[in-house]
Length: 325
Image (cartoon, rainbow, N blue to C red; front, top):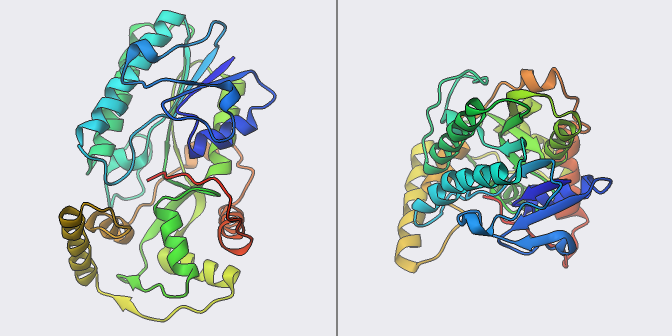
């Protein structure tokens, strides 16, 4: 049996669908919109709520606090760090030795030069810091008793796809509206990961259960610059965007204004200084290691086109939405 923890969200729902030929269970603090019949309620911040069924062979830990605007910031550490420690304790109690953990390239920080898995860690936000701390606990857990364990840590770049409502969706929506204006020169490269390829990788690792401790960056290649990305969307959506570029410093001033409005009005906006900074940053990552052992079923452009088709070309109003970032 495979247990997904945090499988009610975006990636988890795609993964469970792909694992229909396996016996699968799901533990999440939220109900599953698609697989409620195999889901149980549980919050990983509380060890007593982590019930691992008898016969479980592998755990896929997806649960995390990962939005840009989590408040208080202690939630990142309560869920991503202490929650991970609780899951490891529950696995020990149940005798489960196989784990797949979704971390993040956020552990490397911004504007790094194509970091691979050996690059020094330099997280710039609480999300990245908490994910790195969680990885350290997993490595300690493995080193204390490596016998018979199969551990895979996947560090994906930003994940996008159908039904997601994160930063990539907001960007695609703005571009598709035809009212998008570039902030900065647009030459910064953006590594991205299509959800269909992420779940295919997880499924592959579950099938093979390679012994040992393994870490993989994940990004679909080739990386697009922001100019190239907008051009791909223009072609698919058959639109023409205004050829206007806003200087970075003006974009940051606008982001700080929205930060202030968010505090004063108690509302969350799609624009913030952090998101402007991330938009203009180079977020290019080396994923050659994973692509040497895994062939993704979709190209990056195919994933992008599938997302645009679902969200903006053949959109259905009654679709289930996920808030990923």
